[in-house]
Each structure stands twice: as structure tokens, then as C-alpha cells.
Amino acid sequence: MNPEEIIEQLTQMTLLYGPKLLGAIAVWIIGGWIIKAIGSGVRSALTKGKTDPSLMPFLTGMVNGLLRVMLIITALGMLGIEMTSFIAILGAAGLAVGLALSGTLQNFAGGVMILIFKPFKIGDVIDAQGYVGSVAEIQIFNTIMKTPDNKTIIIPNGGLSTSSMINYSTEATRRVDWTIGIAYGDDVDKAREVIKRLCDDDARILKDPEVFIAVSALADSSVNFAVRAWVNAADYWGVYFELNEKVYKTFESEGLNIPYPQMDVHLHKDA
Image (cartoon, rainbow, N blue to C red; front, side, top):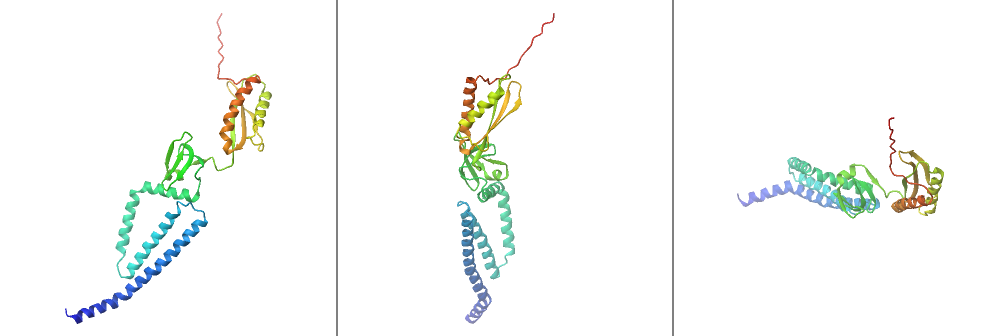
């Protein structure tokens, strides 16, 4: 092949692929600017929406990654490269990876949902998946809890985001419930007055709503009172335990009896 033919072929290739190459380069540069602007917009929107800081890098990175893949496919298509097979292979690979990591992806999706919708936050006391404790850390795949006896519980976010959960820290106040029994034959009105006095003397028990005291059951061995009082959430356990002790000590001094289970047996002798 003589030099004239080589030059002619190079000229033809330049005329054929030059505009496509320039167009692909232009698309790549302009697309990069657009992706950068979109990334900044997404980051700004997430910041205004008070999205969890640990979730923001992931969301912005995922948006940028998807846009980059689309930009690469568009640029290669402009060069005349057949992308159908490449997209099919990419889709098949994504499906295989998704099936292999189905459990992990479920936990990942659960973590994203928790960080976005915030059913609980760090420091909240929750009852979930059979465990009660305070939330120490919310990760993408797991939530870490600390139990009252200082155990560390790691719960996968997949099940945590799709199952029932009790959040004890959502409301500022909580209702404390007691069942207090007195013996049959004791003065019911006096017992009610003593319980009411003990509740009124505790400054942590709120006056509104008023303390509820009523006979709830005539049980086998006792007459049971249902006592319900409202307190600030932080005072719940202190009020609960201390009133139990006060009732025990005060009932004894007031001549009221707290019965224990008992059974009367009557023997009949045949004549």
C-alpha cells in the first residue's frame, strides 16, 4: 500500500469518525457538567430535607454513578459501538449479583428506609425484634442497640424496617400502670384514699390527666385496684418502682393487707 492510499484511507476515516468522536467528546464534557450540577442539586435538596448525614454520601454517589453509566453508554453509542449486547450482559450481571446478595440488599434497603423516614433516632428506647434497648447507632445494614444491662444487640435493618416496633421515646409523657391488691374484708375506700395520697405526694406524677384509681377485679385472693398515672417519660421507672415500695410500707402501717394466693380447705367428717 503506497503512501497516497494510506493518506486517503486516513482521510476517509477522519471524515467518517471525526465528527462522531468530536460529538462524543462534546457529549462527555457537557454531560459531566450536567451531572455535577445535578449532584449539587441533590445534595442541596437532601440538606434542606434534613436527611441523615450518614445517608447523604450514599444517595449522591448512587445518583452520580447511575448518571455516569448513562453518559458512558450514550458516548459509546455515538461512536457507533453496538451497545445492545453490552446492556444485556450488564443487566444479566446485575440480576445475578442481586440474587446472590438478596438478604444483604434487603438489609441495605431497610437501612435506607429507616434513615429517610426516621421511625426512631439515636438515643431512643425501642422494643423491636424481641429486644428492648436504646439505639446506639444506625448503620446502612444494621442497627445497634444497647440493653439496660449493657448488652450490645445488632439487628439487621431488613426485618427491623418491615416489622412492628414500639418507640418509647416518641412522646414526652407515659402512663404508668399498677395492679394493687388488698385482702377481702379490708376497707376499699381507705385503700383508695391511701393510694391517692401516695400519688399526690409524688411531685413527678402529673396532675393532668388526673390519677385514675378503681376496683378492677374481684380476684381469687384479693380485691384488685387498677392505678394509672401519667409521668414524664424519663421518670417512668423511678415512679413505678418507688410507688410499689411506698404502697407496701404504707399499707402495713394503715392496717391494710396485701394478700398472697391462698386456698381454704374444708374437711367434712361423716357421722
